[in-house]
Length: 149
Image 1 (cartoon, rainbow, N blue to C red):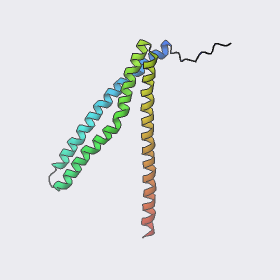
Image 2 (cartoon, rainbow, N blue to C red):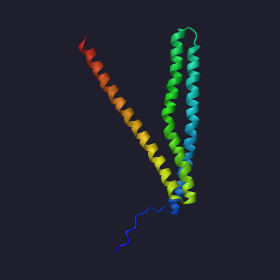
Image 3 (cartoon, rainbow, N blue to C red):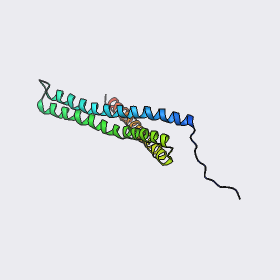
Image 4 (cartoon, one colour):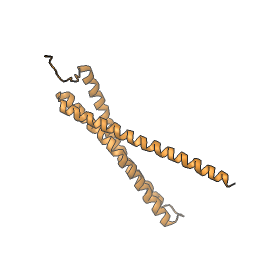
């Protein structure tokens, strides 16, 4: 009878060094992402505040525009949060797994990396679908406007 051992992935020292370096860069990008999210939220509310205080602009319209800027930038930062968080978690767990040779921690790190790419992929599909929808609507509006000349 053959020894039916489940196949295992063996990570050699070269691969471990690559993972350590990748984890370092991932941690840097994760931290930078959190900083940029904070700056984005601050900029949204700063621009919104400046819009609301612009002289010669209708106060109600300026208030709506100002609040809109703040909310739009906060929404973009909220969408950006999960991939940055997942990248940071990958970095921390991957480095921990490489130093401790822990397969469970390594599997969790890979889960966060997969989740980050899956999230970015879904967002990309949504954006491409919106672009396609906008193009179709522009073609329809253009042809409708051309028919009524």
